[in-house]
Structure formats: structure tokens, C-alpha cells
Image 1 (cartoon, rainbow, N blue to C red):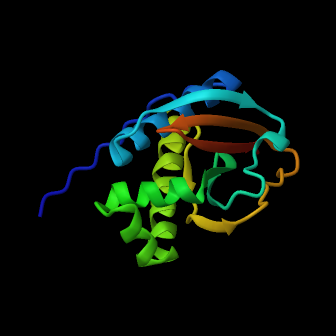
Image 2 (cartoon, one colour):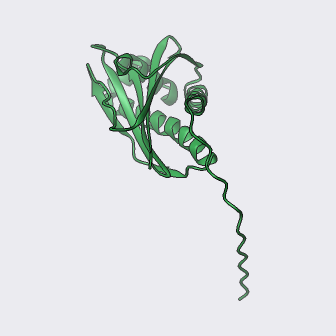
Image 3 (cartoon, one colour):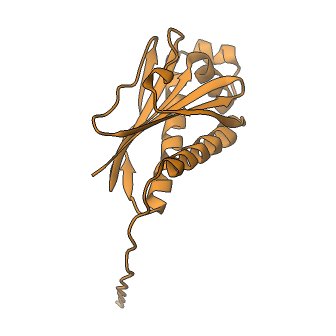
Length: 179
């Protein structure tokens, strides 16, 4: 049996600084890629804020998906959409009518939102890895309800992005904490 091991050491460059512009570009790219690929919809960034009062759907029923990432940088991304948009997205991804999705129950919508959240945060995480911050994703968590709000992680940098996607609003709430 023949085995050859070659060890090459490349100098590691310092990670790129994570700026507000980098975060915005990375999340816009991730949201647009997922919406285009999975929903055949165009997502357009319409607002950027750090005001948590602007990250709510109020009394309208909505669905929050969250996925964290841990490693050289830690954080959470919340993916927030109305219940109506979640049902529409599930129908689009699964080839079902709006009525068929409603008749199938909440689990179908929950699974789709989990998948969309995971794909979006995966795209964002890949951008972090590409600039020197290797990290891994946590499992998605999905919450459905009324009057839900995201609480800030202590000492985390927070940015909130509003998108329009096929007349629906989509919010991503990103909280980063470098160790």
C-alpha cells in the first residue's frame, strides 16, 4: 500500500473587518439568491435600520425563523415574514395552491420557513467564511404568532433589513458578536 502525505502551509491573512456595508451586501445577496432560486420572486432591499421597533409585524400573524452561527464570529439571523407570505412561499416551493397549503396545516409552512431561513443564513455564513471567519450553523428554530419581537443579544451589533418580495415584506434581523 502506497501513501503520500503532503503538508503545505499557507500563511493565513488576517480576517477582513466586518463592516456594516459588508453585512448589508452579504445579507442582500443571500436573501435575493434564495428568493430568486426557491420562490421565483425578486427581493428588493427597501430599508436598513438598527431600530428594533422597526422589526415587527405588529398584530398581523407572522412567522420568525432563526438560525445561529458559531465559530470565529458568533451571531443570530432572524428571518421574519407574515403568515400570508409564508403560506405563499410554501405553495411556490412545493407546487401547491394557497388553499392546498392551508389545508395541509401549519407543519408544511413551518418546514418551508425553516428551509428558507437555513438557506438564507447559510449564504450569509458563507460570506463570513470567505473573508476569514469560519463558523458553523445551528439548527433553525421557527416561531409563529402575533405581536412577536426579537430581543437584542447583549453586546451584539444589530442590523435590521427590510425587503419587498412580490408585494410581501420580509425582514432580516442580524446580530453579530465577535469573540
